[in-house]
Image (cartoon, rainbow, N blue to C red; front, side):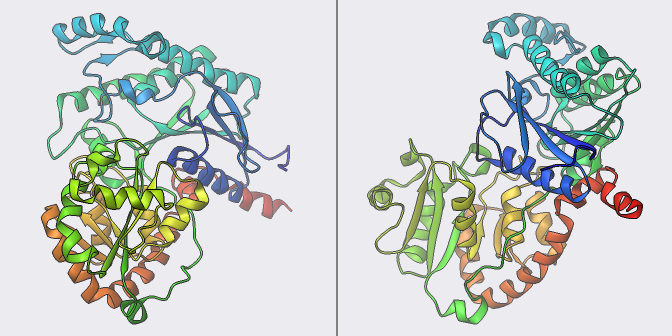
Amino acid sequence: MTNSNEPRLWLIDDNIVGTGGHFLELASLLAGGAKDLGYAPCLAVHQKFDEQHIDLICEPVFSIHRMRRWSLGVDGTSSVKRNTQGTPIGSSRLKRVWHHLRDPLSRHNFRPDNMLQAWSEGFLQVVRQKKMHPDDRIVVNTGDDFQLLALTRALRQLGSDNPLTVHVILHFALYEGDSVSGEAKLYGEQVNDAISMIGQHAVHLHATTEPLARQLEEVGVQATAVPYPVRPRAEKGNQQGIVKLQQQPLNVVLAGLPRAEKGRGQMKSVLSEIWGSHLQPGNFRMAMQVPEKRWQRMVPLHLRSVFRNALDKQGQDPENRLEVQSGNLDEEAYNRFLDSADVGLFLYNPQRYVARCSGVLLEMLIRGTPVIVPKGCWLSEQLDLAGGDGSIGYSYTSTNQIPALLHQVRRDYSELSRMASRHAEKTLRLHNAANTLRTMGIPDRSVAALRAS
């Protein structure tokens, strides 16, 4: 139970429609951090979410979700700047006309004007019904440029008699590669236009990686880089180092359901390249998640019967070459899956992850698991922080290098594990949820309460 006198920290995330997934996990982690700082955490979610999460108070208020569909960043489909009513402004006349024609063709709930109105109404419902006071804080867990239009719209309707403090966490990259796109420049204009209209309210922007903060700065948006939180885990029960080398095989884990930016298109070729040399001889074992339907397109033709046989036997290949989990895993099963990893393999698109954080990689790092990641993106920067290639793992420029890197991992496994275990402690201290909130500038009320007692 929470103390009614505690200030509240409201977490706002319309993307949470059910249990499982990283949206709810992030909210749960921030809620734990809020408690550590002396706040009573509450969570505003989508109306489809009809469950409670441990002792976290959940309010299903939003009728829409996935606002980033109209973002000007790489995860959105927009190419024109908008105002708080969703009307295309700025950009070229041709683009404005095109969007004027396109917007009404979207489904009613997905039209920009309707999405902005619905999100604003959900936000105002929380603020008005829950009677926010000055010590309360609001955190929009998964923000973007389009959602900021909705937030500004709501704050303008609210007026400035009761100024609010709102923190918005930005996750998704503005552009791919090294060149600032035209859409990214419009992103900056759209965000700054919105921030300039909020009146006496305070809106603080935060980016989950240093590269994303730099991208935002390049388009004139000021955002504080904050560490993405990760859940602490008990030490793995299996022994590491030389003892592990005597056990066959090393378990290579591809965690998370594959999407286009997470290597869905590379899985077939990687499996073909390592099957005969690594998996079939028993030096390595591949554990992976696949969608319940259409998983065949990610698997070489000659291996589909092997996969099908494993799926029929609760994911276990009788010859211990594969573990295949289909569909989403609940929190306990997912963590067991990560705990089983001896090596974390990431097939992510480096262009999409130039400035984007991977929560899965952080979950591997805090477990002290050596990793193989793509070069030239945020994931390989984490290797640099630990000492570079060969410290806690290896990076590649082409997936063709993965078979050779696996050989190196086996050769160097004892030292890699030792370094990874040491780096895990540093990662966990930095990516603690309470530290995330403190870095955002949210006051630590627990210290004040302790002094007053």
